[in-house]
Image 1 (cartoon, rainbow, N blue to C red):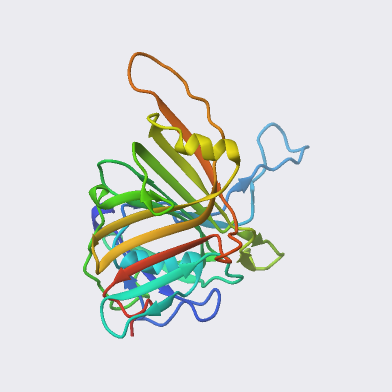
Image 2: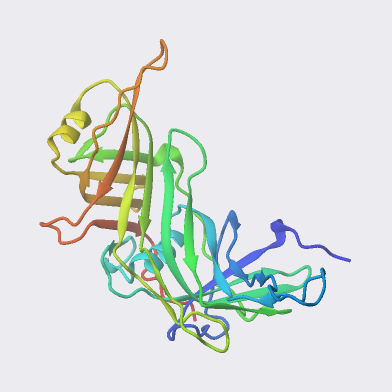
Length: 318
């Protein structure tokens, strides 16, 4: 008897043309991932009725919830698929590679996806439909692997013993490393940074209507949010002075292998709180700035994500 192992698991992703309806077979990408909790669950409600003795009556099924996280590499190609899910279709420039894909915050509608998670050894394939990307977060640091956690909300899940995704389109994986990362403020590299953390959220609103199939009717984007933390060695008062003044600044979080392979998140208006400056011992002092972003009056958006790679678009393979 074979047993399911994570090493044999696979994930397929395709964009839907109709919410909740998976695209045809052979229209899916084979997606790399480090871990996932994406799936559906249906809890049981304890039966509260009395009069039948001390032993309880059978439980009752509750509503179905389909959601979860996917931990993915921050890379030059697959990241564009997730950025399209988070921000909507990009504006792409370039007649040939390298192409520059510009994603902006604030879209009123987001594309939905079908995501199939499979364990071929069992076999078991779970197709989630109506999947909408809710948030992304990642950490920048001096060393270590660079991964992002994508949180998703789905409409429902169907189970099968064979894949419905067909032949998957495979892309070469080109990962960014911590060594490729940098953080800039107002066009200049920010010095003495120990780490940075970024979280963007669409704050999806589940449309929980009464249906015979127990699924939600949709997941609508609400007011977006972009925030994070910057931890710096206390060597100057640049960030502290800005926090005290209350003025915004532009922060740029960047990964670059070369001019043809890079990812940049530009946060146009960042506000910093005035932090404490703890002294915890004889070593160096650090300050943590829990920043927040807002709509920039000049750019007209809160943030711009730019991915430069050799892909012309992020449409479903055919």
